[in-house]
Length: 346
Image 1 (cartoon, rainbow, N blue to C red):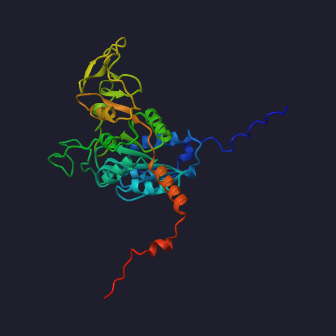
Image 2 (spheres, one colour; image 1 turned 60 degrees about the horizontal axis):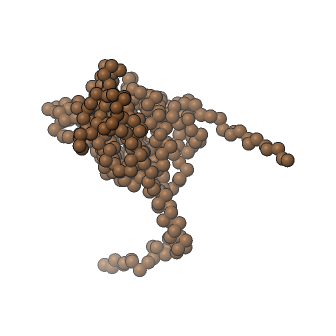
Image 3 (tube, one colour; image 1 turned 120 degrees about the horizontal axis):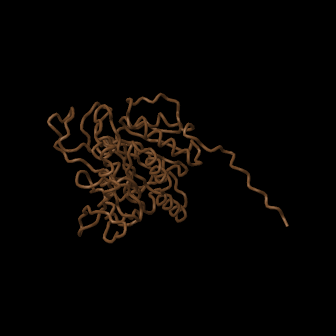
């Protein structure tokens, strides 16, 4: 009888939050919500055994896009709105990377809107974290695609006449496979959502309600403020009804036909209540959740959707292997000198 030899312990030490601190001076305004988001990200990555050299943070332009400088990982500070494009190229050439796109509401949804949509619909295997402060902070306070109608800013002195984009609604319309919302004042919830995104295979989209203390202070306070959040926020739990409100006045959501309505919550009778199902392959219920907005309804936080679908990168790599097996490896010279060429003569 042979004695079983115990496996050798993993020689790599477990990571800590400090392992992901780059040492670069963090240059956000004092009190900016980005500090909390950065700390939650560093705390989240420390839970995984992924080598730091296998992480890449890709950003565009904006205050949040300084993120790569502050992470002790690889990173790209790219051009306005194009971070998903750079991340797509990285994903297709290196399947071992864990990729995060860090963007803002202006960067992703204005000049970068088209790139955002296609990254979502293609189901590329990377994570997109959108910092939403409903303002252009880096360029000193112009209204952004998520600013509410009537918002007075330097570029809308008489109030914005535009209807704001709902980022979660856009992600669901593009059929992203993981969609969530969290907030900068709840680091534990942020970290939990980031961890879920890390473990999801496919595109992960997280909207973070963030406070710009200089140019749009307390923009989310009517929903997330200490005095209001119990009645105006609802934390999603898979398989459970949407319950919110103060301890002595709990409420829930039910559907009246196709429309949600608020009712008093009775834990002994949940029949007819809207039960959260994040794994529903149809986007209907997830889309409905995006329509729960203040002041008519509590705003949902947590994972709205988490479904499985083939990723673009897996499908592309499989297609390449299938063609190689069928036709053999191609030659660049043959491609350049095919019959589909022409000669320009004077």
